Length: 273
Image (tube, rainbow, N blue to C red):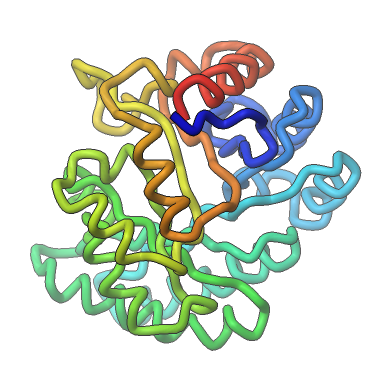
């Protein structure tokens, strides 16, 4: 079954312990001997970039990615420029904190023009690449489940993400594979294989039945219907051997003590991922 035997690739995506500050999440990861953490920008902003860097350095934790960049579409040209400027700041934060991956959640259409919004996404990525490349940052396009198209991203399949990424070299743009968003897709394994050499991140959780909430309904691995291990093996076959982030939006999990969440996360990672 090729079960993972250690947690050396395990990363706490910070949103999984959302009630924790960045400092608490880093220190909790260190206590649990989880070697990686994925940071969210609003948590960095709470204490500042300099202090965030110091906390991470002192704890000896490695940063797997920064979330998020993207959100390119906007109603006006001026607002679109502001989005690009914010993406440049996200690139700077990623570089300063020692990761080479900025996760792009590409953004919804500001009107009903989905194809137009997708073109804005493509244009935004192209504009951002030179700045990111100068700073050693790769842009990871994360496709979201189609149910998020109206609110979070017009990029709703791994095929679309591959289409965007393949225009550029793998050291510029790649894809982020999140099981919650792609497990349903009949072309999933084909598209994972297509992404060979350009997978920049791998996120795990589970799909709960019945699904309690569109945003806050993710489950801990093993609590839902996703057959996780074959997906992980496919991602590895496509060349990805990097950190595996546990990313869970779920109020019941958020309300639990963070140390308990990390203990359960480690156990389920070994059993199911």
